[in-house]
Image (cartoon, rainbow, N blue to C red; front, top):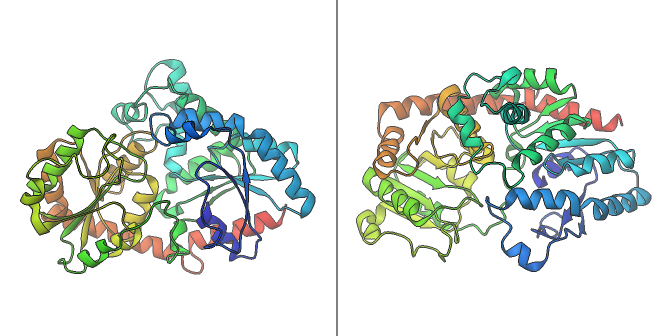
Length: 423
């Protein structure tokens, strides 16, 4: 959202960001051009200590879609009294904002931070659940198999996942338009399908981070020693490993990751986020003898400047959970991927990486150490990896073309600006 705000600010818009107290952004000094307004989120301090994880994420978002209605409406109403507002842009997960915008007679544009292909699969899920079978019916996307759909269902719907997805789709269709962090050439079939199904303007203006490459939207402090270490490694020799800012794993999975990296005999830069293994401060769960085994072949940090890492010539592959930001950033730098998706949009993204764009490999057996080692070799050492790298670099070229004058992303942004000004 901050990246999008910066893009629109460069087009002449004044930006006011309404945010919750939970995960309140510390960006006032970094973005003095924006106005920040805080609203109550309804959480107690003890709630916040246990909320930001995948297991309780559905509960948290569903809770806030109810608890934030009145504080958000009051804040937005005061803002409308102070100055004219062209429109509201809100993340599609905050579906409550559609009814608030309608009540205040304010156009709302939804921001969808996943792929366009993901929204098509999500649109089919309520019917899939209702009929009791895994089939994408009218929204059938050939790459997605029943096995892939089951991964999206990981954890079931007991925590309100289906409710959240269903209402999100309904209120997104009720919006005045959708902004996507993607570009048309990457997902053209999905772009055409969304245009027919949602029947509202669609603006694929991404990748967002390419507009402001020097700015960081990371919530965690970056360890820049990783760049110094990469500077001393050969070209395309390092596998970069990071599973994002939320994903967690048990000690057994963590140990298998470690031994998989060791068995590959390849260089690696591994992001181990504190708390990624529940109950662990940082590296206590590393198996005995691992650090001695890998020696200087490995570099482990708490967090890395990912965009800069992926752009580094030493990085030859990216082992990722396939969150959309990570997939896009890898495509933008022409880096092939090793995919370990968990749930939500990640299995969808992984299928496209492996089966559609053919720029990665899937770890079918989870964190099985031998398979991990083989997958790393396929990407870093084998001819197959070179072929994936060539296809990745071809997509990278398409990204760059889309952002040039007259390119699809640039044109979509100009269309978005004109659309907002028309309200």
